[in-house]
Image (cartoon, rainbow, N blue to C red; front, side, top):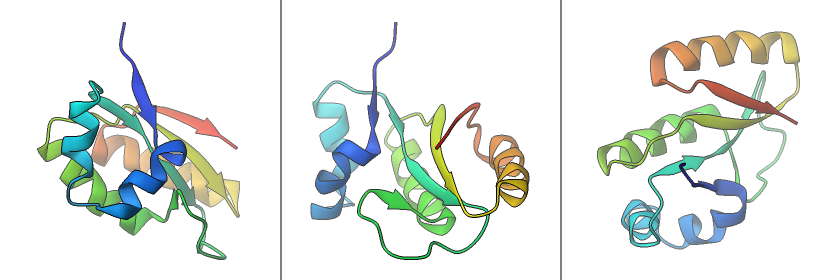
Length: 102
């Protein structure tokens, strides 16, 4: 059984020090995270704990380099038709295999 950290709840830790966040996640004993990402259009406003796709890609590199897996993503969207295309692309390019739709 694996336990992961849902990023919306851990957003404050990430905002405090994004560069140190992966090591803090590992120190807590987690090896997986589930970020909240806005797809299918432009993020209408900055919402703490919700990333746009660009932030996801930057942070995914940092997390994966530290051995943190991202098997799932919590998705918010403006346009679900576009978001579905984004999810298929992200699944192929980033290895995310589960999407939780909000």
